[in-house]
Length: 143
Image 1 (spheres, one colour):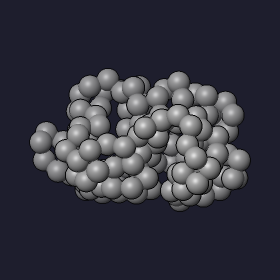
Image 2: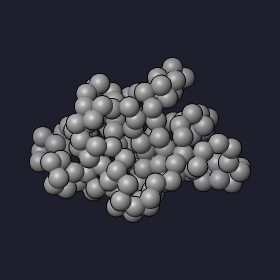
Image 3: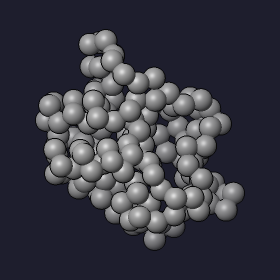
């Protein structure tokens, strides 16, 4: 589902996108993020990304839950407010994990081009993604 939303749907999506990762963003910046990204619904059991595949997208989970798996073993469960896929996209590496929807999801989908466009308009957008990368690396080192 992408394209024009009703004003009510747009407000709801923007409210869901106002997660801690983007808490310092203005209303206009949140509007730009939602407008530039692609809103998608994803069915349960769908693989959003596969380990050792090239990175071409990242997602902000608006609602639902995913399982993060490495070598077939679940290493994390993530939900609303989490950014997934950003590590490989920012670092230009292969995927380090497979991510599967455990429940139906609502997500904002970002391509490398979308990230570049948003970073050009909102310089701290990239900082928000890098913050997610740094948190994930710190968590992985603690595990």
